Length: 156
Image (cartoon, rainbow, N blue to C red; front, side, top):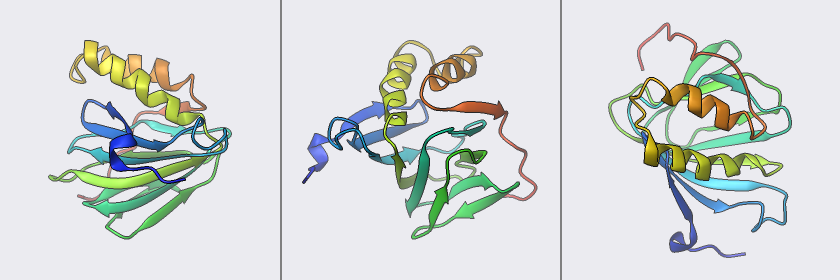
């Protein structure tokens, strides 16, 4: 399989962009892969995926990942592996965009991004209802929200 950049499925995330390169259709239902840009201030709540193992490989900037009870600031070239069932969160606590590759197995979670794109088209991330809508959408895609983003005990 060869996938050119112009073949990515591109979705706005409000404070970033998801470029899904491999999805269920392209992987025969086995895994997904995307290139992501998360802008400063992007953050997720603490959550886990009951079935999906995830991997994050940082290309540029610093991706902060909360794993095993603490925040880890991942610099370019760093790989994080998050087994299914493991509570985690991610954020861009810096001043520059972060770019990374993320993948998951089995596939399915990547279906969240088209729905998020549709939400962003009708509701600003600064709208008070945005977070509740994101939680509603993501819960349909092998994700269970555990709570808000954990506080940082040190600067990014």
